Length: 108
Length: 116
Image (tube, rainbow over all chains, first blue to last red; front, side, top):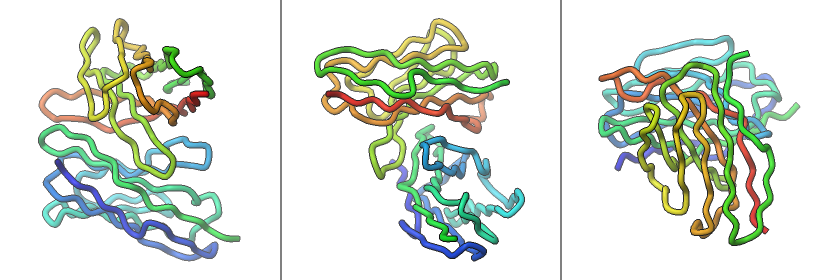
């Protein structure tokens, strides 16, 4: 089945810094989402982005489907950005797979 | 407000007992899903349903059962056959668009199940 990798696995930033999180997938996809899981476990939708670029405030995402990767950019990070960021994909076999996540800690 | 609710938030169960987790949505979504998350891990699909009275197994369905009698509700039963049931359980829903595969999923707040 499709494999999803995320990097880096852990990231520690000072408040105000910028960061880039990466999601690589091993096969073609027709659906890709980015989520933020907060410390209480709630999964918050960030982007639904099977291809192209989207922006929402300090966050933006780019998916290059032909090269099988997606990037999540966080600018001017805040302590409330801390948590785990997941990439999830659906392949053309209708298999839905989550990546292992990137754990982000933003220090004041 | 529209959304997905899960209850209870925390659940404790004795070994050998069945337990049912509730998931309700008022988003008028066709499809609903159950996932399991173990500490430090990603989510794994247990069951999903794209229409009332129909559901399919996901990657880790053994030891679980579901029903979909109403569009709004998709309860999950964790049976005594599930070997390691202690985990965080998340329910999700999405609009179903025929021919376009799985659409954007939205998640409930989750239920933490602990087997004593």
